Amino acid sequence: MHIRLFVGAAILTTLAVTSCDRLSTPAEAPEAAAFSHATTADVSGYYMPVEPVRIGKWSLDHVFVGQASEFESWEGGSRGETFGPVMIQLNDASSPMVATELGEAHSVTARVLPTRYAVTDTEVTFEGRSPELGRVAFEGQLDQGALATSKRNLGGDGVVLTGTLRAGGQTVRNVRLTWWMGD
Image 1 (cartoon, rainbow, N blue to C red):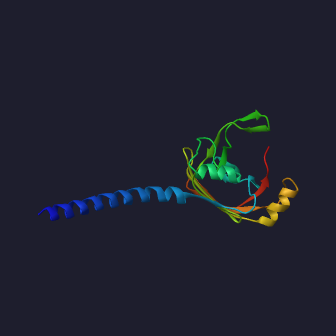
Image 2: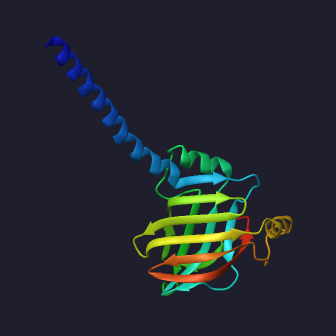
Image 3: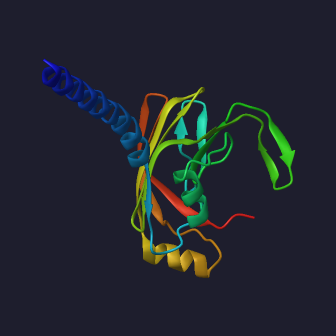
């Protein structure tokens, strides 16, 4: 009788420990898989539209890609509410213009932080949420040769990133972006 109780208690303990492990693993796995970067080159900078990209009243201002240390901080769990290693900014084109230190800019913007991203030497994939636009996603192909030329020239008009932008329930294909290093 004591052996049955002992064996029963051991089985229950094993099941309890195993179920705890099963509960914690799926919760951690998607978080870790949601954010990845694997670059051998510096792809950081601002990627600006070559021609206007509009979704309703919103216009794409830029796609930002950070430096390796910013990816490592984010992927390590250090996340802010206003900055991420990959971000998309859209402007409300119907909003008034205001003076800034860089010139004039629209007064209403939507900065979209990532809920998921994957960045490599040749691809930038991003997904985030915006109160104004809902789900915002971008999938693009990075041209390393054009990026290297643009960096040598400290920016330029050459297309370095081409992709598809989805926001506000709309899709814009063949979004062409040039590189700018920022301030």
